[in-house]
Length: 596
Ligand code: AMP
Image 1 (cartoon, rainbow, N blue to C red):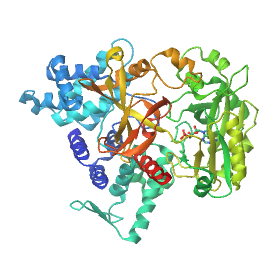
Image 2 (tube, protein in one colour):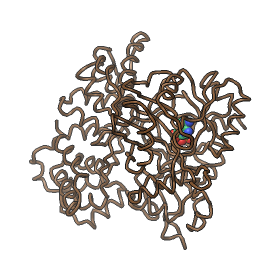
Image 3 (tube, protein in one colour):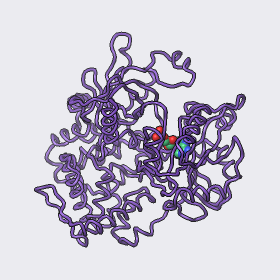
Image 4 (cartoon, rainbow, N blue to C red):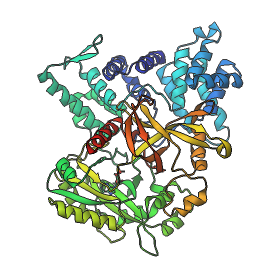
């Protein structure tokens, strides 16, 4: 398949914000995609060459792409840079410069999807001496034979910043439309952007949507799911299973206002658990092989040899996938340490064993997705917990099941909550006893109850250079939430709560917050464009923000603004896909109105 076909779809996707139209466009593309290209196309639609559960990141700096554009077009890097400043998008600049190239390129052999995929996939493999040159060559080779529109999207894909707004929902629905559309008589009316379906057909339609969603929950890879849908149909999708060693998305929890609200959401009686302020780990075991993943699905097995050992010795099952929160413990005082301390262990590359001694951890297991070859995703929570208990030899302060009570009484809940806070926890979790494990969604099978007003986790998408003594630092940060199509929507600017000096930060014993310097260093390599004092950055750095109030506002693309936003802390463990959603913000805005 020619890459041009994909590039044109990217453009159409970028040109519309209508979800149904996006679904239609993707489904038409998938329909005509030959089998051998299907997986590649699905990955590329999300701007990726590796599936979501995969470790590898491209990690290509803008400078490198600039050099590749220079080679492909003969334009000086200075001029490229000037244009980039104007467009704010290296993709657009590449498109323009390729267009200006001489006509002769029109006779080049067309770029295939396969070639683009292959070259981009080879980027992280280039290591050691000469790696930079090899990477530039791989990109320049593509750009040299690219048409303008292809250059735009190749550039953005390489920079991991595709921005065409393909959400998981559209991709899932598009798989159903393409491979089961005829059978389900799906009729999309383009003029009216409407999707005609009778109530009866809707029931059948939802069956297919659920099958694709459930297969995705297990595989964590739409490319694989699309292939199964095409080749093996509904039966194939139903037979998809978990694979030990491939991390799945973790289940997420909504926030409850209070215990009444919590019980209302999950039902009575419910399981109440401590909400430990630690680090989430997904633990996989297959025979002797144990792998640990963060909630961002990064593999951190090497950083926690102590955890691997305890798991190996104290959980009795051939294979499993478990969900746990590990917390750091002060070896002298035996007090539990806040998250910031243990986060140091995640980044460690050296002296890992020494670190394991200075910050030992307690493993609190709270859920099980697979035990002894049995997939437990659809098993009710109470049974999952019972299975977990059977296989775990608990050792206090080392490996335990999350502290739990089962109750239908608000009084008991409040006592348990106080007890949990007294131990230094963040609050409690209230979980439905009869519900399955739902990867990646905040469906309300469990909720959290925390004391403070809900903070928001937002991603930094822009910043401004400071003035006077802050001139070297980025000092005001534009933050964004995420909408249902995966687009980041601005919601405000944050400049307070950030410290000037490290000393101030250290005084704050729990190492919360961040300094301007720290944020500047984190953001500088992520700058995509610069105009005057303002920069746009690649969405990567997630921060927790508190605020006085959410207001309606035409200024920001979310339609909302925050009154007195203040940085609480960095959230390095949080993937950008999991920042606060526009939907949640709308909800908070509503509840806040009721409170008034
Ligand atoms: P939040 O990050 O505020 O959305 O809260 C959810 C997080 O709490 C989960 O991702 C876990 O990392 C953590 N957590 C701590 N204790 C538990 C527990 N008993 N059950 C589930 N999650 C827990």
